[in-house]
Length: 611
Image (cartoon, rainbow, N blue to C red; front, side, top):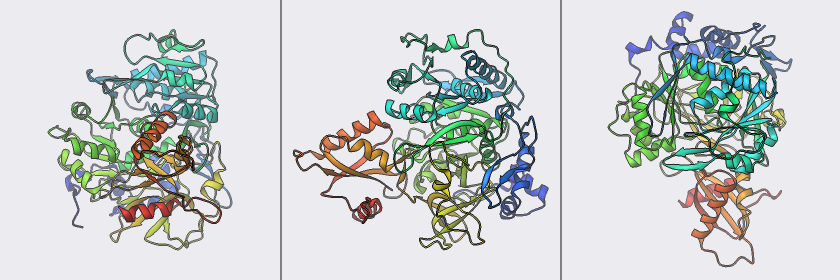
């Protein structure tokens, strides 16, 4: 292909984890290794458990617990473990976290320091009367402390309720209600780009349970509700040792949320086994070694937050965190000074950097690869990104919360093409079907279970109905699992992602349904109803939000710019300020099916034809 931008260096291939395993198995091509990983899934996952040194109190009887009809009931039957124990397998003197606050110095915590604070958190939860199985919310920016809090909650046998720090009070309240959280860790405010953004105030408005409140800078001066605790008070007199609670592999460690098509967001529980998918993808597809430093601007409210923790720590590497906005040169200088080797991001960041040129002239020579997820990327932008680090490859990474990682990705053994995926994930197979359910090179992709990481339950939905009901059978009669992405297989065997097959969209790397957006927008004064769609910009890249609006019959003449501003304010206050409206189109009516469903695909097609 003429757009090849990176070829693997033959002298470096032998050092990759995949190449070493290929040599052990005696296979000569990556394709053969991938085929082994899906033909012998038990053998593949057993091998990863050995390579990662996963610690069990009781060893599993096998990898998969399957029903007679092939349904996945769970993973690692018979085992007892706490995944946090395996997060501290590195030498305790080794650096676990490199971190820097905006305007501050580069700092480090060792594995020993991280484990000590996580143990204090576990002991503090026990002192509050919380026990194994209790859900504990985290509404914090991604900091060194939030990593320790996350690990401390899981180590105590509790489950982390993940809430993005950008959410409005109503969205926080919804997640607390669904999860039944019994406490919440939060912060007085967030300091970002010179601004002070309230956080504890939003948690109060959400009527959250007992809060443990950290301070962004200096001493906590904010008055707390009765029963709430300052971080220092919570930690007072807590021991730095804690015996992790051994759990069933299906015990919940994290409750993450992903938008459905109507109503409340789906609550997706990650179990004690789900982190193994994060670790495996990190080990093989991102080739993470103990000497690596992994950075990914993210948040615990998005799956990439927990993914970053597990992908780095299970592989005995270091996490690199910049506690501030990733949009400016100071963030790029952190990547340079922390000597980051694996750097993950979303395409919208790259587009902004390219426009501002803020990252040019930095020394990113320590990087061995980028990684990209959350949105469809733009080949031109990513060619520019690769050039910033002396032509390093981008590991394109497409998956989902309910997968625990990726299903389409890349390796460091294969040619890297910007915005192209070279392989299905190891240990996971899939099929592309057209509109009539026949195998095709372009259409909707269905996963072929089993694979560690694939969810087996939802907290507030019927799992079988969401992922299996009415799905066609595979070419060999195998059960297929719905994921909802449109994918194209290219002539050379590579893949291109084409976005969602349903009306769930990705805005700024965060999934949101049309229904959620429309629920908020329909409350704006002159609006009767709306239809929200996501469209690709010219040349590709992150999706743009376009809103079709029908006004009430008695609505006064409305300036379209003012209407768009009112709608943006509603989204900011009630949903998420990261969701930006690109365009508002006022129409007389919305196209509907005979059953009165809005045909958003028709609107999307019409919009693309006219632009």
